[in-house]
Each structure stands twice: as structure tokens, then as C-alpha cells.
Length: 100
Image (cartoon, rainbow, N blue to C red; front, top):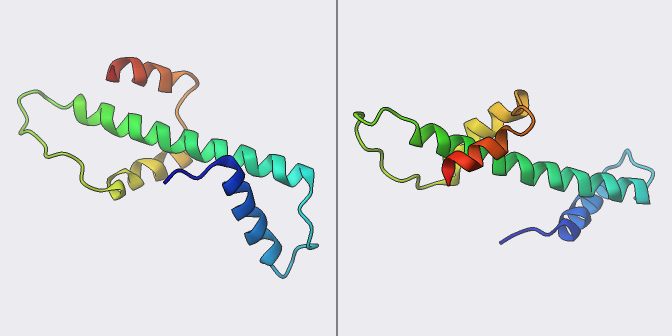
């Protein structure tokens, strides 16, 4: 199930407005920021998938064959890593060209 930008914005708005510390309004600027956060999240996960795949494919050809990844949890360490150390600009494009 893909969460659309609209659904993501509604989710963020609802969570935000339920907080006891907010002014109980969600303005246009907040909505635009939520859209940007959705884009960043999607980009982060796309980058984590590409980086993890590239790392697995770049292993020594003489190393034992790895079984397929069977859980999204496999990518959590890479997602955490990319939150701390984002990929350089255009590196995701480079990885994409290597994965094709």
C-alpha cells in the first residue's frame, strides 16, 4: 500500500493537531512542509534500497551466494545510516545506473 502525499499530509495534520501543545490549526505552510517531508521520506527509502542492493551486488564474486532479502527490516540499518550521512548529490543516479 502506497501512502499518497495527500494521505501523508492528512496523517501528519491529524497527529499534529492531537498534540496538546499546538495552536490547533494547520496552515498552508504546514501543509507544504508535510508534502516536503513526504518527498524526503520517499527519497530516503529509495536511496536506502538502492544502496543496500548495490552493496550486495558488489560483493566478492567468490563469496558464498546470499539468499534473497526476505524482510523490509533488512533495510533499517541503511535507512538509519542515510539519515545520519545522506548520499552525496547525484550519487543515487550513479547507483541506479549501476543497478540497471
